[in-house]
Amino acid sequence: MGRAKRVLEIILLVGILAGLFISSSTPYGKQDIRGTISKFVDEGTVSENWQDFSFQYGKKEISIDNNGVAGVIEFFLRKGTHFSVFAILAAAWYRVLRQRLTAMVALPWSAFLSLAVAVLDEWHQTFTPDRTGQVADVVLDGIGVSTMLLIIAVWSLWRSRKTR
Image (cartoon, rainbow, N blue to C red; front, side):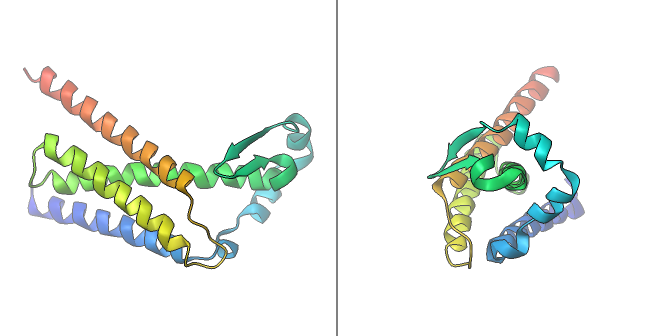
């Protein structure tokens, strides 16, 4: 692997970690996109069709009644971002660790380090105004991490069998 590629992988990892830190340091009010969502969504129609939609996340009920249409859409966008960013973080850890370690060692370390970042990220949010750290978010982050590392493991196994 070329030196430039290795450096770029490390820069990507550091960039993701910095982005998470900045995001966790930003109060919710500065990240709130419900107003923007309301401009693009016909809330009346969505509210009629999804009136009875509700579920528990952490210790809160997520519903049109409690959160409004824009709030529910924002919830899914935020949680989709959690899943995606931590999946990408796991891949970035794997790529960096794989520079020096075997795949069988890099995979569990990527999981451990990504989950450690998830826990620290949620803890960090407890110090940010209008933010809370949630165990449910760490679980969601862990699902993103596990999904990505499973994809990497299956892909690696498939590639190794294909080359035989």
